[in-house]
Length: 258
Length: 157
Image 1 (cartoon, rainbow over the protein chains, first blue to last red):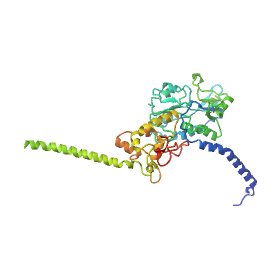
Image 2 (cartoon, chains in turn purple, orange; image 1 turned 90 degrees about the horizontal axis):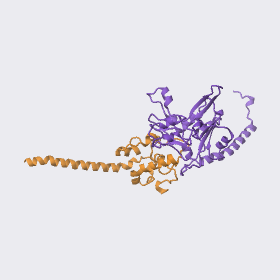
Image 3 (cartoon, chains in turn green, blue; image 1 turned 60 degrees about the vertical axis):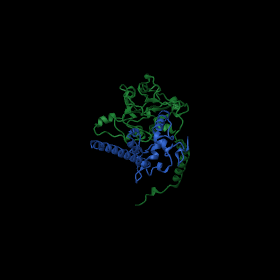
Image 4 (tube, chains in turn purple, brown; image 1 turned 90 degrees about the vertical axis):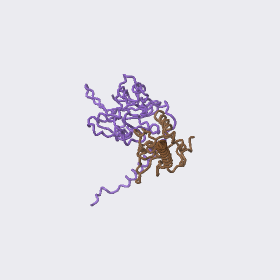
């Protein structure tokens, strides 16, 4: 093969790229090292000093994109569940555990379509906690609403009480669970804001990371009580709403552009 | 004569009872002698002198430690301490010759061997993984909490 004259190496261009890579590494490295260093679990109980939440900018949420859903499935081992042989594919689609759903809102008058990921809204006054007969559904001090599977009896009252249909029930025996995300038959479950990441001091959630990695940046995770956190600054800067704000649940997940 | 005939079955019963008792005791001795093998060869636990508490304490009370820890973990977010179930599994899991971990609740493995003998159903692994598996937040150190190698009882007493 003959070499095309235009393919000769431009050493000046290479040096510039090398310099750019070096500068990028120098800027990014302290953040990376900080994250690794803080990955050890914190032995202290969580406190109400923080309240974790999400801000979802629906203007940046693309139709058909499922990156946040897939990232959630991988993070929590939901991609390890399989259809029972006796169940029809349609029934399985309805019944398998889903912690984040992509929802499409269409305004009949204007025709405007909005896409958004819908997960547990981590209410300050969660209806699922109100109705739970055993205390399995509870709110941690840092505002994360979780199911304690050790005391969940699988009555699914919380699933009926949730205005967002955010909860799933595990109908079949589970295999191959992840160490950080125990899941099993007979319990209700939902988004827990990547609770093991919180306890290990990591910075973000799987869905927010995936959305940022896809270049969308529609999901911002952070501490709603910290006025300097990115989520608080974003909430101050742009108009946002709670879904079903008429219920006065003071949700920890807020939406812009709905 | 009749009296002698009556006594033969009676002595026989007594003898059989004694024989059965001796056999039961011997069997229990044999099982007690076999107990160390339930710490699986090739696991990290096999190389250590003691668990997070003394072996005798752990045999009787491990479930209380795990139960207390589970509440602290789920409700207060306290993870990776000395009594975490993930720590148990990290240390007690054995491996196949080609390096694949074997779940602690599989037949003749660390948890199931004793639980089968004691006829106590273990529910942990309906939800929890029996092998260390995945997750970016998972610390590779296993028992966490800065427990030194050699004797896990060394810290936090």
